[in-house]
Structure formats: structure tokens, C-alpha cells
Amino acid sequence: MEVVHIEDVPVEEVWGRLKSDASSALIDVRTRAEWTFVGLPDLNQIGKQILTVEWQTSPDNRIDAAFPERLAIVLDAAGAKKDAELFFVCRSGVRSRMAAEAMANAGYQRCRNVADGFEGPLDANRHRGQVAGWKAAGLPWVQG
Image 1 (cartoon, rainbow, N blue to C red):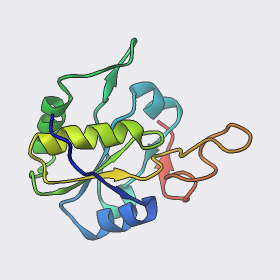
Image 2 (image 1 turned 90 degrees about the vertical axis):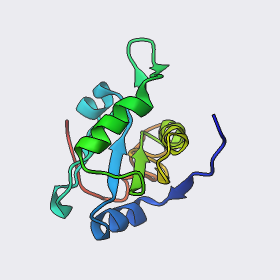
Image 3 (image 1 turned 135 degrees about the vertical axis):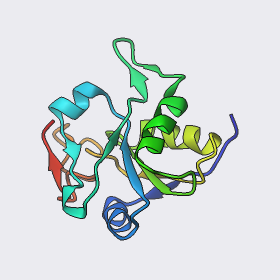
């Protein structure tokens, strides 16, 4: 796999770009359990739906080798072209970066990583969602 540079985009900027660019998309690569128990970004007020495709499969958390193919099907169904700006989000920005790299290597030209992810880093009390990331920024989200 070729090494590509993936831009980290702050969550507020991601929201603005999703709002202003009809062809852009947000892809959440966390697990079904995270979507259900932690929540999901909510794009309804900007007329979009989040795309959800797991980067890792349970129960052993292996990276899904078929991820690029599975996401390509979802993107095609959503009408996203290979030149659309795609934002990848996970809990804190690690898995989403790997997913963005995989899709860039699959020919998608504008893959971006959502800086700090949905929940961001741990705070002093070892809790997420308070310091940085989608939730901490006060962006819309829903409980799964």
C-alpha cells in the first residue's frame, strides 16, 4: 500500500465543509457497538446522512480487508464520486486515518481525517468527549 498524506481537519471545519459542499460525505468507521452506545454525528440539519462502515470487525477487532470494497459500494449508492471530499471519523482519529489512507489508495482523491474524532482524547478524569472532538465541539449528534 502506498503511503499517502491525509489531512487532519478540525471538527468545526469538517462541519462547515460538509454544509457547503453537497458532494462531500462523512464516513464513521467505528464499530456497531460504538454507534449504538456512544452515539453518531447527526447531519440531518444540513440535509445529509452519515455513512457507517466498520473498519474493524468484531469480536477480534481485526481490520476488515474488504473495507475499501464495502465502502466503495456504500459511496456509490450514496452518489459519492471518487473526487468527492470524504471525511473519515472514529473515536479519536487513529482508525479513521488508516481508513482514509486505504480509500486514497483505492483511488478516492480527497480523503480527510476528522481531527480528534467523535470523542477526542481522555481528559484528566479519563473520560472522553470533554476535551476535543465532535461531541466536545457541541456539534449535532444522536444516541444510536
